Image 1 (cartoon, one colour):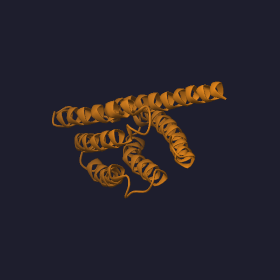
Image 2: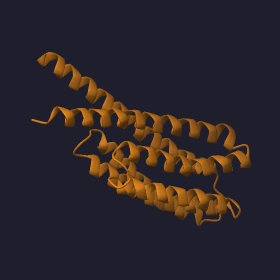
Image 3: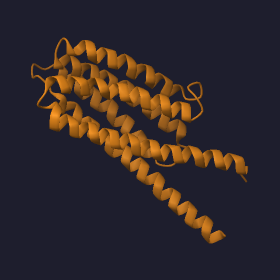
Length: 196
C-alpha cells in the first residue's frame, strides 16, 4: 500500500499536470487564432508571434520542470528549455533572411522538441495518465518537423499559416490530455466515495 504522503505528492503533481495541459491548450488556441486573424495580415505581428511561440514553450517547460521536482530530475524538459531558447534566437535571425529560413528553423525545433516531449511522456507514463496523447504529440511533432524542412527547401514562400496548423494540432493533444486527467480524477474520486 502506498504511503499517504506519497499519494498526496502524486495527487498534487497530477493536479498540476491537468492545469498545465489546459494552460498549454489555451495558449495554443489563442496563438492560432491570433496567427490567422492578425498574423496573416501583418508581417510584423506574424514575426512577433513566431518569436513568441518557442519562447513560450521554453517558459512552460521550465515552470513544469520546476513544479515537477526541478531541472535535474526532469532532464528532457531541461533540454527542451534550452532547445526552445536557442530556437527563439534562431527565429529572430531567420526572420531577417526569409520565411523559408523561419520554417526550416521551426522544422528543426519541432523534431527536437517533439522527441524531448516524447521522452518526458514516456518517463511519466508509469506515474500519470493521459501520457499516450503526449507520446502521440511528440511523435507527430517530429514528423511535422521533417515536413517543415522539406517545405522550407521548396521555392514556395511559406507563411505563419504553415506553423498555425501545427500549433492547432498541438493544442488538441494538450486538451485531450487535460480532459483525460480530469475524467480519471472524477472516476477515482467516485470510487473512493463508494468505498467510504
